[in-house]
Image (cartoon, rainbow over all chains, first blue to last red; front, side, top):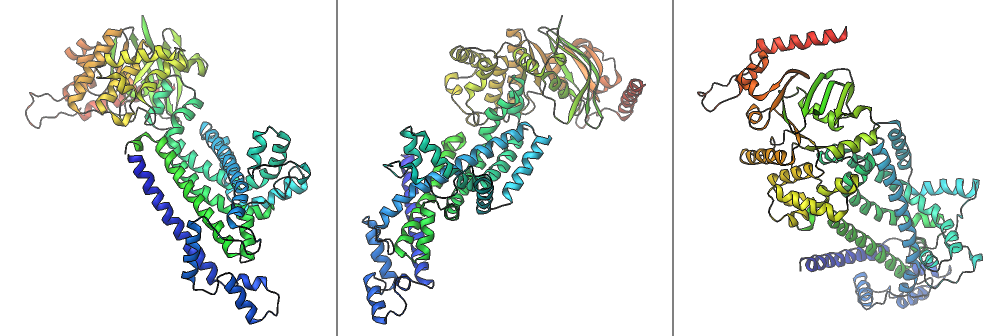
Length: 336
Length: 288
């Protein structure tokens, strides 16, 4: 009963958040200079031509009126048609979303693995040169933003030593016939490891670019919490029982130290999804972010709105997921 | 035959300041020895050295710790750890912080049996239930599934006692196990420790600053001042006629209900000065 109520409250706040995001974007892209009509018509078009096109796309109406028409259609599942690509926005977004999801989840996985391992290692070797070395590496990782890491990776691992692909999502020469847009997942499920290999060759560099700063943040916070936990009495008691330092850190300290890091990962993951916009552009990766930039350049209003709505939905979902994991991991919150 | 024999144990801070000065003491099998002294005398440090949980800021500079005839300090770290886990156990001071808040009670009692001593899980769980009954916990099955925050301080201390006896260790070190509890619970816990110690025939090193407790629980005691054992005797002899002047003053400083109001008697300054001189002389002798 309590869970149902919590979920309903959550759903309501999610809807309000989405509506808010929709309104802001809707208004902003109509208020800023530049409009789709100007992008479409050749120079020297007459006033009459402009008016005709405006009427065609409903841009002659007031902004609240336009919003009302759009939102009524959205509720009925119609997200409109892209002005430049002339395809339903819903199909376009759904087609690209898996690419961005795969990329950002891969980046998250890498960040958690590297950041977590580094934090555990630094705790095991605390107050030694090893901890110092890990701290320095973390500082370096944090000193550059994701897109500069992207550029650095392209230059070193794409150009200097061309070990990875630096453009696109899959090699067309592979001739693999994908049935879905979750390329990596599909290739894995069909045991086509040659395709998996090719996909990873494309995905790893952008994923690492996104993951490096996040890994450093995870390292710093998790290490801090772990080191604080290592002074606790239950750790001392576990020592007298005969456990090794490694199992004490992973079994006794980690579950208690992980909660702040988990919250942070949630917040940072939404930033990471935001980061995909530039990273996808940099690596010509055919995801939602890359499409978003094109849509903004072309003032493709329906497409921008659709993409923003999906991003907003993703963000709220991530937050919901974090809250649920938090409750599952912290017994003190479960009955509250 | 002593089950635990500490010989000339020295512990120093990293900067060289001595915390334990050639401490020697024996705990016979099945015996209860109290370790008394004021705050900072090094009582807890001895227990920590035996259990291998000295803080990182201090180091062991000399001596032997024989547990069941085996010198712990001569063993490789892994063997030492497992030997301590199998043969000794700690009853910690503060029951509110000594249980892991994110783990259920059951595994916290059985973990040592399963992971270190290689018991089967069902056997270990049966053993835990039995122990919880021994420490008078109602509905032990439910408690096994609880988290620490769901239980009271007294309950948690009972659980920690049960957990200490889980592997049938022949030595238990109790580090001021009643200090963090309120007075009514203190008495019950003390009685329980005594009861468990007798039933399991365990040697007990009982660290305390409360001489009233000492007379109730122990057969022998060591008095510690500034990391040096200044008196090592059996309890009756101590309460009848302490030999050392500091012990005498310490005993006289214990408040009694029969005392008139406002008659608290601190250890006199001249006696403190005398002990300090004694310790300094000892240090000088060692440095020669």
